[in-house]
Image (tube, rainbow, N blue to C red; front, side, top):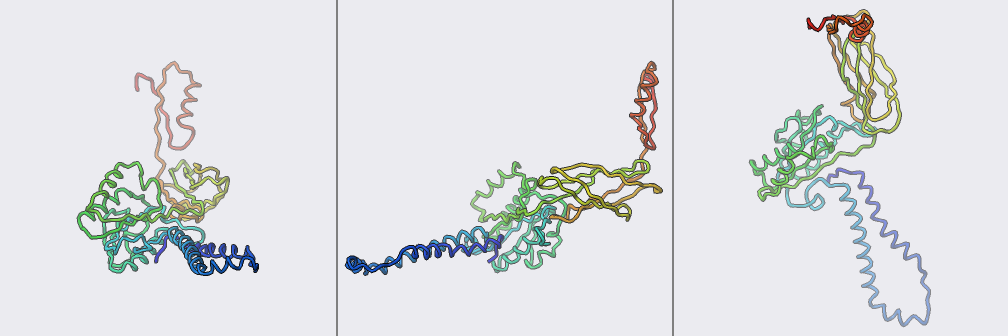
Length: 369
């Protein structure tokens, strides 16, 4: 049996709680022989065995209720009695979210959400015996059959990507496949971290999907293999723009995190044409835009590099690359009346060309404009 939340199985120790409470209650009373009550004991002795059986059955069902609750929270993945029942599954359609957020890992475990779900699906498919596995991934959006669940991590259409995911579109593709292939009893497994932008809850296609699922020809169940657990904050870095200004490289950067957990510092590393440098950036809030300048003394033309932060929950958004070309000349025109005083013209000219190289200002009269 495969469980999505295996840590919850530690809760099975709670099965012993009803038994412990029962034993403690029995110790609350002390038996004392009292001659005047002996005739009552003889009258009830015949029914004592039935009462004991009744108490044992009550204790058993209480323990089973706790065990059933723990199994439900642990979320069994395989079919059958503990896997939500419904008979033998013939086809499993896996909707695989390959967006960048699925590369998140928790704590010191280097297994990403995507790799974790692929491993669990392979284990669950081995318990379903002869069931076929069809994968619809978020990058290609195509239904592709997998010959063996064991090769899932090695396939190109299960590899990580930096794109998003279109969950409603993939579900409609799954229904189209069921309508055309008619694979018999089927289940649709949606493996996703439940990012709102990927699920698009306001998309009009959800209504069409719900209407199609209500048709009698579809014998499919849907399971949401949610991977939305979050045990640590995730930071990301992005280069908004990179340009050359005279003898300097100007980088406009944006640093974001999932939750605002108060002021902190982030280690920022910049590699420009093989030359590395590092600095600490004070970060407060959920998103912060800032600018970095790098001296380009003695260099000319174009260049490239990357900006990175220290490893955290998702390695896919820890690095952002940039490239820039030669500084483009900027030609500005100032339209001014001939009666404009010289001091005003100097101020306007300085505003259009504050002193950077390759910036020129030409003053023209309205008649020549």
